[in-house]
Image 1 (cartoon, rainbow, N blue to C red):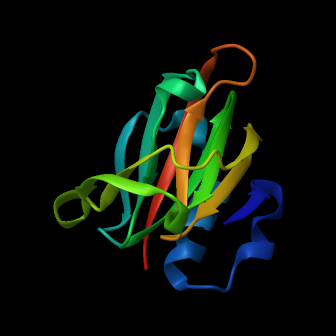
Image 2 (cartoon, one colour):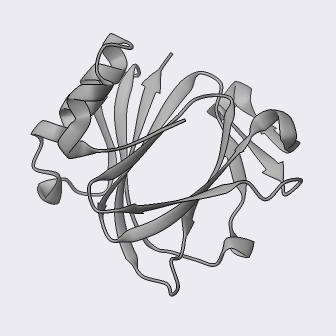
Length: 151
């Protein structure tokens, strides 16, 4: 897991071409003009799942993880908490890896909270269980880009 701000995205370049493409998209695109939905940047290798929602209490969320993709969870507007815990410390409860590249996990550990405001992102790898969309004090609207980056 890596945390950053889009103003410093160049410090995160060089790990892979797909990751570079996703970060450059976030840095160089007018994100306010992008509507919710799936937007292909490099076919199935790099795409954005643009979401708008109101944050929710921690208890209403669930841990998830992926095996074929890295997630870049980028907050375009608003503020939320994403809790991160090692997949090895979590108990798999729903296996959707073959058809949807995600699994859901039971709350076997609390994990560590990361507050993300506008411009902040987390890069989450397959070993990083994550619980997104958690409120910071009170529920508020968020626009988020979940960049899916094929390994």
